[in-house]
Length: 153
Ligand SMILES: [Zn+2]
Image 1 (tube, rainbow, N blue to C red):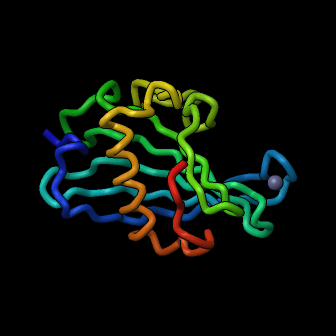
Image 2 (cartoon, rainbow, N blue to C red; image 1 turned 90 degrees about the vertical axis):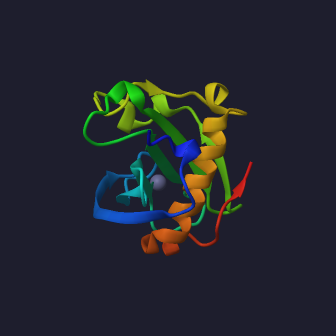
Image 3 (cartoon, helix red, strand yellow; image 1 turned 90 degrees about the horizontal axis):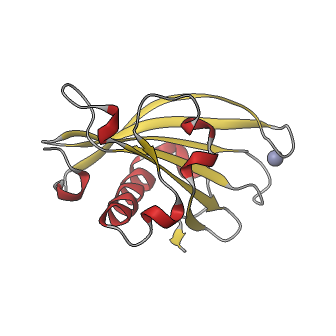
């Protein structure tokens, strides 16, 4: 079973497309949106992720939306969860937030549950999410636009 928590160390990022993320909700400036997935060498895809940010002023946060769980043949949306984090660029910190408030949770059929911060904090899945984030941060070259690696908060 390709459970992220039991995945080996051979995790690799596959970069997907970069696309227009639409206007920033706060200021209307264009946003960047990139996506990709994390593959385990033996278990297959463990996570699809989207990162959205507004280039320019560091005061703009970046949003990390992850769909965590097994992907591919024989898996179901109910096996996967939506998880969201906010990366504060001025503090280089990253925080788990409620996934249901993010647009990737609206009208989607890719995962069963959009997790709240409370539901995720302190669980084994949270540890997995941070592990995946480390892999994403190191593996996705496009995130170099986001100043410094995040500290957890
Ligand atoms: Zn803005």
